Image: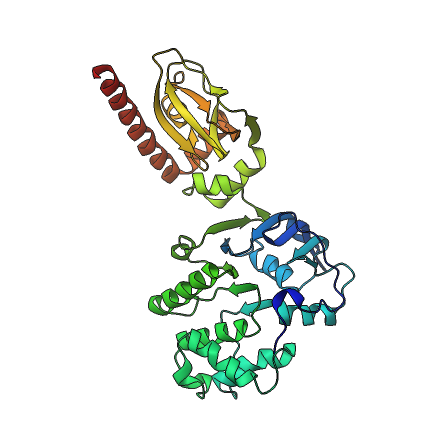
Length: 385
């Protein structure tokens, strides 16, 4: 029988305490530089990222953004030039040989490729057993039964003795997922797993990933398909080798990646204590405010007759009405019952970005108009009552 996950041998790898007890992946200052005859080119520029157990995470970015290189760092296929990669408490690079890392990968990581990578001369069941053979997990006589269980999980038990060429592309990908899960790894990494599939087959794959995530597996998926990112619990965007702040990407999804990266680099972080005034009434507004953590109340007045016009939470924003329309603040904004972390981005720079991104400008204009109408309605209702 296979040993329980927590008691698996570490193969000489050094264990480390994670930054958070529920973390699966901890990246600290990951840099990757390639050298060739033309000189040096830095693909990853100091990546800091924590991914938690049970998350279903999508990583997106344009060609050349560094997402595939980042994936290679996580899977141990390539080495970072600098930084530390800790997965499940194991530093997979510091003082680790290639054979140790390969053995660790076989026992702790499942990889799903875009082109399936099934061996054509082996049946689906034999392809699934191959990963158990490689990792030396499960008794020899138990492996066929385990392979059948994995194929049943993905709905391919009737095709266990078929060669890959005898089944559809969608079924080949399901078989590849069964193979990746055969050794019960806590982390599953998928590189464009639906890239060669029709929409129906792609939905089957994502449904399965969602189910695996709910059962406790951590799923990391690289994709170009924006329709899939809406189904993940978290979406990470990489641009020019740097991660875009998730508050920026969630609050302003209409922006181009280069604009998101500009805001990520230049926005200032501020902390406000509970009930502290963030934006005063009738004051000039010189920034866009993005809520990174906590919540705020938008208030009409601060006297005994003050009224709460809106309650805004993390990944929301305020100040856009004044930036678009000019003039002083229409209302006051106060921190909620817990400390609030705010990103502020200068007015002039944000207006420049809006000029370069008409789609974002139109979206913000609609939000601003709707908010103004809603606040006017609330004021009228309050006066009547």
